Length: 158
Image (tube, rainbow, N blue to C red; front, side):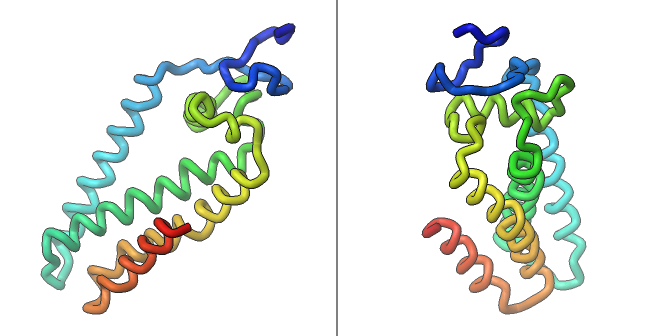
């Protein structure tokens, strides 16, 4: 490995020009992610409790889930799709660091495998907004349950 900064990804021969080693620890990645996620869940829970239509606790939890999954798809996966050089940024963002860490478990991400990029692009651009829309349905409609259920089933099947 004659690279100035050998990478931790498999295979060791994977060519990553300009690779910049991970600068954040797992804790430095997880703590802000978990704190932001908990804040989002709390905010959606509190806002959903103020709806003019009385929502069941199940509907409110579903709204929390759809907001969480939608924003995860758009923000986390979107940064992967639209920031192709995350592994070589000299001043990496938090999201660059997230993807360098994630790629330790699945090097298709750091290798920019075309199928992986395509699937993540679809997820970020279509599934993310659709999930947010599904999360709004319990507050807006009495026909709210079948549509989000069908969307979740489509995600499981795909």
